[in-house]
Length: 203
Image 1 (tube, one colour):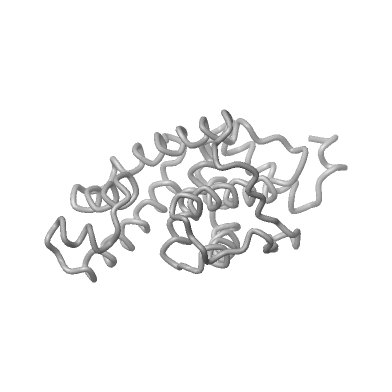
Image 2: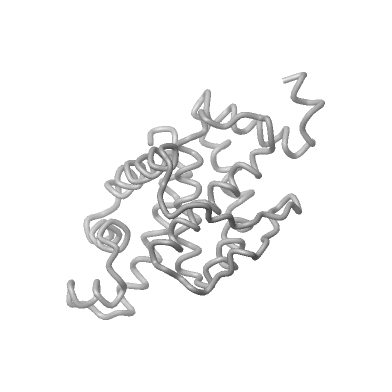
């Protein structure tokens, strides 16, 4: 830690200490502190990239899920925030590819919480081996978290994120109003955040 102190800023060092507590001791408060510090900056960056509050909400949850699941891979060669924003950006790029979205320019630069500019770099249409592993980890993590929801919320989340149905398709399939689908999915995301924040050491 003494060596790191001379290499990291005060804020980055604090983040690293939280990462160590979360990773090595399963400290729930450390997970919560990291989540609370970066949730809004990540959300607003993803909102700029997707132009969709719903998608930004979903992708924010996924970014933290992937980051917390992969804390063993983080090294203090650079700030935790840089690593986290990179995960969020790459996950969003993958989402954009799948949805074939046309609302974002790959030339745009986005500023993270440290004032660093983050570019979108789409090098290939296929995932490399590391990305495939991360994608698999994300799916396993999400299924584990979702399994803790009440049945009616779990069904909605599974249809939306695992089966990738639109809100309209879910409403038609379950024969419920579109507004009810959106409201319940919004509520389900809040439950998922709380599960991650309060029980992440068991995930």
